[in-house]
Image: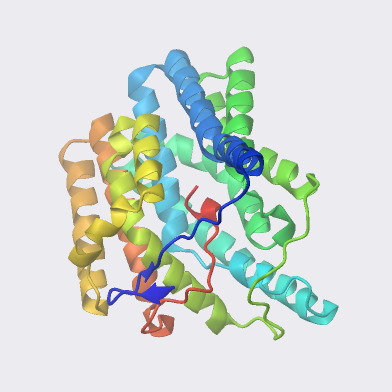
Length: 343
């Protein structure tokens, strides 16, 4: 594998020939895994938003979507990546693993407090500009924040099928809220409850042990976490830009964004992104200015969705700027980013 001047890992994929029957079995297995990891979760998410649309109508659906995007903006701003460090210590001495888990729990606990504080400030700001429905949705969605914190600090919750558990749990919770006649409150609660459902499912679902390709037999430090956070945030920024641009199309936009990620289409944006600290700061300020413009100028549901999307980009870019001191000159090809980090 080589590294491009922009810091993006590149390389060729090699396909090893197999006997006809074995090759067909491998192909079927890959199709099944792809269906369970990508297609089925997306279908379940479409069903979830269809239920929400039926229950609360298009205007409140747009507001709820804006609230979920705003929540992701908060999470992207106050984010520290601990999962890769925990995975890299699987199989190391017990004292190393214990220290890493306890340190990750402390870090994620601090991030949880920061997220809660940011959500409270955002609720106050939304109430001040008359967006009472979105302000009401945010605390209900936020009940899932502790589950995400626990998942990020537990290597046993790493699963390629987390998105399947998350989307299925959300659909089940939305249907339960519909049956209970909870209306918009039930739909918002479904997004908080789905984090807990998915956490419980993947935490106790049997799986084979993970074997790290680059084990780290050393105590976990904040510098390592910050470095991984900066690298992963920089890698995912182009994908997040395309995802935000397509968010207005709801689940269909999510499908298009993830398809583009799988085909590396988002890398075409790479040359146009900032590559210096000042560029990331300017990008964050411009995105946040656009968010304020849409929120204060219009306030309509679609305008608030656009504002939330720009907030998400501002948060993602600001997080990279905050971690800039630890960002290496070259990307780390050994760092495997959690596929669920952007969920």
